[in-house]
Amino acid sequence: MKGFLKFLFIMNIVSVLLSILYLVSPIETVYLNGYGLLLIVTLTGNIIASVIGSQSIKIDYTYLILSSIGLIAVMLLNTVVSLSPTNASSRSVLSIGILFLMMILGAIVTRTPHTRRLTRGRGPFLSQRLSEKKANKVIRIILMLLLSIVLLIGAFLAFVMVTGIDVGLVQVVISQYSLFYSLIFLSIAGLLLKISKVKLQSIIGVLISFLGISLFVLFNLPLFTIPSLLNDSETNYTEAFGEEWKTIGEDDPLFMSSPLSIPGYFFGIPSTDYAVTEDVLFYEGTEGVDEGLELRFDVYTPTLDAAQLPGEGSTLIRIHGGGWNSGNKGSENYSQINKYFAAQGYVVFDVQYGLNDQDQFVEFATIPDEIAGDFSIDDMVRHLGIFTTYLADHHEEYSANIDSVFVSGGSAGGHLTNAVALGLSSGEYTELLDDRLTVNGIIPIYPANGLAGYQDITGEDELVDPALLVEEDSPPTLVYQGQHDTIIDPRVAENFKAAYLENGNTEIAIIRMPYGEHASDLYFPGFYSQTFIYYMERFMYQYK
Image (cartoon, rainbow, N blue to C red; front, side, top):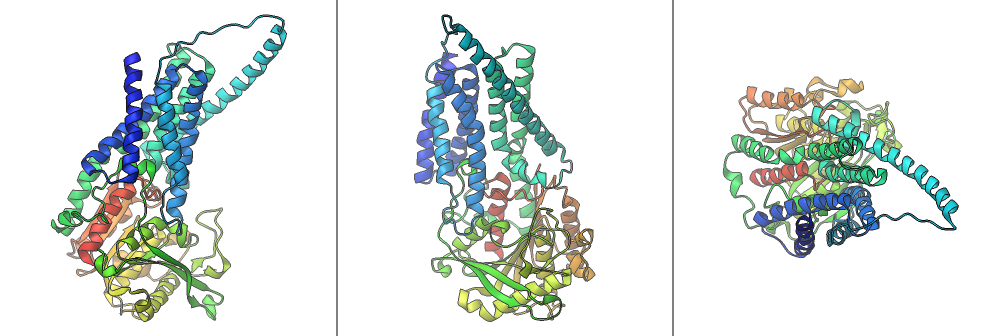
């Protein structure tokens, strides 16, 4: 046991040093994920050491509490700064501080083995101590019940992730955060063992340990599937777009050198230089269904000369999701994607469109009156078409190249991405979409093709299901799809690919995410998002 603790102590010190190195200077990819795995092993070992016991039970409790509540904070803080359009770093200093504190405290936990002896107090204050003991017992029971409930919630989330059953929007916060959950629920099981004071060898101790270890293993399944995800992604991408992409980004620090960074998962992935201008008005409706409608966009631009950057001023139009009746630009459209590609030299437009004002896809969601109305799919495409005309008229103001345009969006935004891009490329919707724009590539993310009817939103058949617009010369398309998405059935993406192939067009690839649910790209530093961005940046460079 002393050898195990000494080994963990050394790993904590090494992890601290490597974390500092990682944050202040680049580390070669070949070493980067080795360090990331070391970090996972270290944090896991610290939990085990805290359960076994150090020289101070207070330190044990402190570490286990920090490992559970602290990692929840890291997870949330990383997400919030990533989603904020104006957070220039996209990294949380507080999250980084919590992770360093965990490693430092872990070194203290593992410094010396547990040698504590329990003593029983006696003397004139015996009755007072008995009273305190009863109060403490009540508190212990309450804490045990609460921790047991939390573990059962963890078991439910793990069951949902593994089986892919439909639990609505709850699925959004499961698989992409699973590595955090593996450590959080192992820590909670450790806390329950400590508070209950049961022996590990007892039936209850074995059950709690088994549940904690089982949750740890189950929530690590997405991590275990990373090799197959990367292999399948490379195969699918190469089959669709050839071998050229493999040399893209070599020795260019603006490109991801690897589709996976484990340290980035914990510490967040920093944004580099970009500028953002928010809430630019591009349309005011004055009559008919559009009366009172006000539509705006945010534009993300490179701070350096785009001609010297990979994107070279090409345009990326981003369309938010939300079931056609909720959602918005900005943080609700995963702004770190916009920041990332602006820094690469693309001019990124995050665009609003009119939302149907019926019952919301997300029941508790509210949308501003100025973007709500009785809008059909045709109206939404028309609104986005108004933006294409605005862009064609004003593109020089933003140094945006409209001869090289990419369109991307998720869910309902993925459907509208396909409708707008294929509508433009078909040349059949010039009354709605400005044909001065040339679409070079389409990037739909779990696209909701043909599903608007489930929300009682109507439109022209080919705009409701853009698969009907696919032609032999339709633009190349890169699709993101979670395999456990129960809101948008993965078969929708497969049918979209089938439409390409049936029209003799092989330039379409689906990046399929094992265990990935709906919106599983929300966490930008997550494994799914990292993998897709790795291919997305190469796709856009290849076809710009």
